[in-house]
Image 1 (cartoon, rainbow, N blue to C red):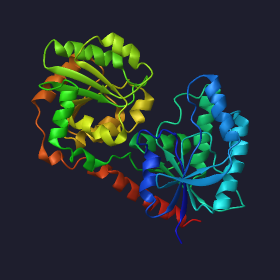
Image 2 (cartoon, rainbow, N blue to C red):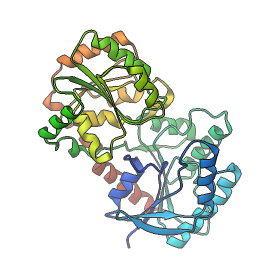
Image 3 (cartoon, helix red, strand yellow):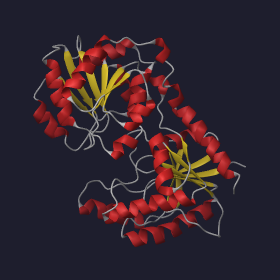
Length: 382
């Protein structure tokens, strides 16, 4: 009999490729997979948050199909915290029983405490994709930490997407975690027609330019002020440089005003099926992350994607980047002089054919297979 899997992703973003959603899509050829859906607030103010909360409180429990994948919904609370745990566990338990779910794969989202119940036996995988919380002094930080601790301790298996997070789970929650990193569709980066890349360069005015790219969301963990200052200093040495910033973020309008340089291009967000083109258009990738625990423990999949595109990269000095250990990645603290030295070195480096297979083990297909092995292991405990 085909196993039924409920996947609870940590975010509802559907315009970018996210770990548990991609895994859910890929394992659905073997299992009957349902992806839990909830309302994401349309803005930051209290009105949008209350609206999303009310929509989910009054949701009717059901399963529906969209784009050839199954999604699940049931009523639950966003706030207050004491109701989140008490009531959401009950609603989740009813859903598991009614739909005869065999395995729950739960990401780090504090809405969804999995029930420990005698009414129904199921297997539980807790997926730690990011540091659960950077602080525990606020009410929300404390609640998220306790959520993660409880889920890790009662899970049949814990999976972590970086080796740093494996160590974190061991030290904080006293559980051994399986290391299964984030993935990418590796073949996309080698199957792009050269004519298309030339057209894209022409579209953005990049013909004859040495193109430096940052690709990803521009959150407060990215030091854009440093990146712009580094580019300004680099242009004094190399007149052929262009900087392309591919992604969205709350402060993009501010940085556009600050940049004041026609060789700095902000593309905004790019659809998932187009993003590989922007890695391939690059001559050099950069990751100017601020040094903190969140970034140290994160698995930066964009470094794998640059590698699949056969590009050199300059990255902040982060623990997980060092653990990755790719020879095409030059690592330094956010220091303009050191980054200029790395830029000079990167421009002189040539790709070594021995590096061509570095990214292969991070293909989503292989990640999904490793997840399948964990699913089969925990299923034997039902």
